[in-house]
Image 1 (cartoon, one colour):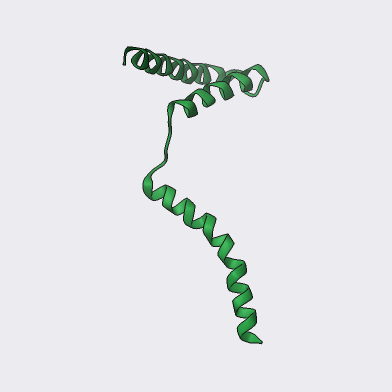
Image 2 (cartoon, helix red, strand yellow):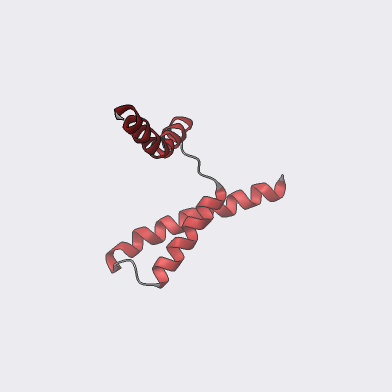
Length: 83
């Protein structure tokens, strides 16, 4: 009976361990960030700004980050057109 309980507990723990293993493997491989992720971030900033998510004293730094991100994405788009 004790062996059956241990087997059931091991089976229950196995699915929970799988996501943890996947996260550890992703960390080892390094985080992946691509152009579409950056485009998504730009959209998030736009929506958050439109909805008033930022305080007035935060707008300058948010705007600077948005402008840098936009410039980078435009440069990448130009490189892709040339290639």
